[in-house]
Image 1 (tube, rainbow, N blue to C red):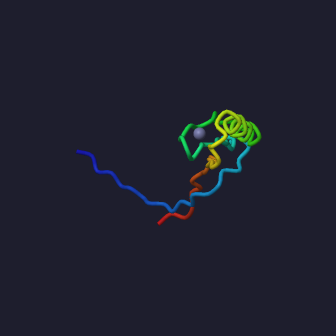
Image 2 (cartoon, rainbow, N blue to C red; image 1 turned 90 degrees about the vertical axis):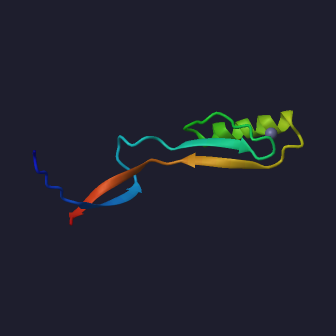
Image 3 (cartoon, rainbow, N blue to C red; image 1 turned 30 degrees about the vertical axis):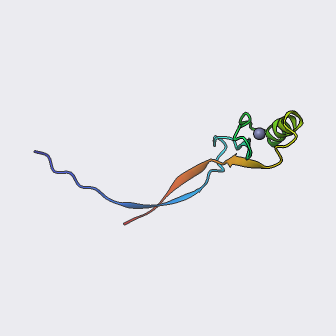
Amino acid sequence: MTRETYRFREYLITSDTEPDAEPYTYAMTCAVCEEMGPRSEEMADAHEWAERHLKANPEHLTYREHITRPYLAKPGKWL
Ligand SMILES: [Zn+2]
């Protein structure tokens, strides 16, 4: 039987601004029919989908924007 010792550490969950962080991504959902456009690293691409969706469905007037941002757990002091 082995005995193990654990130490606990504080972490801060914060926005990942490291050079290798995942990119922000954007997508839009039609709030009327729940159809979701493609997720893109460009906000304009997501908004263009909503404009095309509105042209095809003139009565679909409300949308939701989904923004995904990378976060990182930064180690803090040992407890
Ligand atoms: Zn729709």
